[in-house]
Image (cartoon, rainbow, N blue to C red):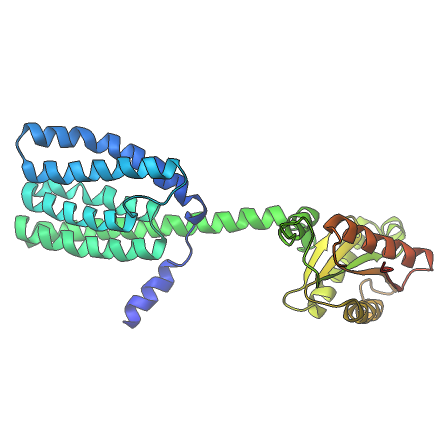
Length: 338
């Protein structure tokens, strides 16, 4: 049991890289499978091989019914896990009836499992297929050939999982590149807009209970002019690290401009957000963001008001930030509530 658990962790079967595309894959697979298997059904009919004709006819009919349902946005008429068990039975019947020629059907069946089923279920069916086809091969061809079938089919099973792991890693890397700022590692402005849009209620208003801190580094242009852009980049990275050390797990930091950031505080009142902002301002002023010089920030605080849109919420935070700049910088200004 421990060996099986270790194997599952090593293969990382919980990472289902194809989950977001599964409906489209199921539709295209059903089309191709129906077209591909129809000639074999006809071939077995002509050859009076009634067992294989029946199996192929059932599979073709199932694929066509699923095409009809999936094109209309419905669940498959015949669940694909059911088809998976049918494919296992069909592969075993093919091996028993045709010997080595029947083994070839086990390989496309194995691929089918991982494309149209959740990965955990596909892995379970793959192991059932491996054991069943090996047993059928032993009966029909003897153990020497059955051992070769076991090794080749097992190798394909492992390689499918290796490829899916690579695909999953590439997907995560692409998502990370799309939503993060490459210099500081904070989320980017695009992700801020997308994340806040997801929090908007059906009525077009965001859910009340969150707060925003609009953060801007004071006199950042002077840092770049006097010390160079490399020094300015280092200040940005140190600021993000300092904020990251203070923020809660659910808080999210976004870089929205050159030296501008937004810290989203979920489920935080205006008073609590003001306290967070004051503590953060003091910590950043005391932190060594730039050796030998004091670097401070101005912060605007805005809590989401009832009926307020996301755009209006961001604008009130920006207005509060500009107020902090006008009042002399290195301070916190709270947005005025209506």
